[in-house]
Image 1 (spheres, helix red, strand yellow):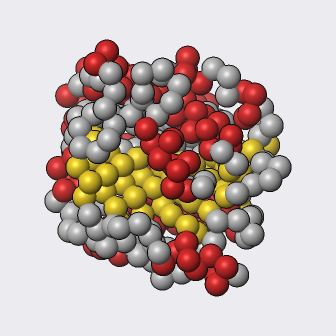
Image 2 (cartoon, rainbow, N blue to C red):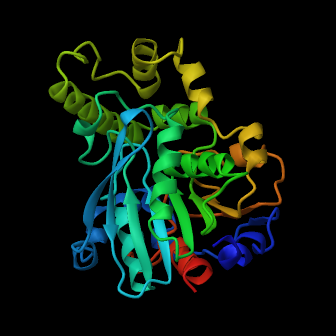
Length: 337
């Protein structure tokens, strides 16, 4: 089986090279970073995805320590590859950027598996323990299981934002023993240093409102399901994300404070240099959440191609018709061809 896919694994495109300000050049009216970032999650862009994703079937993956993660499989009658898609923090398998990417890749002939991290999407009831981004083992095992379901197909893993952070850490974990059919890992707008990302969100009134509202809603859902274990009534609705993290982490983890917890899932030098599977990072200089400097501080890695656009916002890269994105076309061209 390995020989069948070996050419996909050992012959990546020229990597270790930073492609700065690449070919994405949206029209002026859609170019501002705020427009790109908002449109990335705008539900209007997901209209029509039901035609494809309505065929999806839920799957519960049983991973380490009794943890269960929910995914959705959209079969392809004559698949050319399998795409495993991983959403960002407080997103889900139904996030707009996941749905539109799934639609594009399915039309290009890909079998689709949309994976939810713990406590994301309709999965809060599956595990009593609360979601923490340091829980990498369960995501690695779930992605490995999803790849193993189609051993006859080349597979690629694509993560967005926090999902991009997970994708890079999964790639590092897979360094010595990747799935035999793995073709490439792709990280779009990945969180490199979670401390910097949290600080940026806290300084941006709209982003703070957006993520705080979603996180509080998720926590209250967890409390409703497990009232004997969780009580979040002391969380102030005016707290920023760093303050909420500082309050929750000592209570529900082994980390003494927010800084220790956030640093524990950073894509630092040690993680980045362990990556050996072909990997591509796609990000933007104008990302309002993820400082591009965090990526540029990491050393060169010949397994990692870095594509840095001047524009694109966070998870954006949306073209003038709003229905297509630069990265979707890139994925089809490089991974579904």
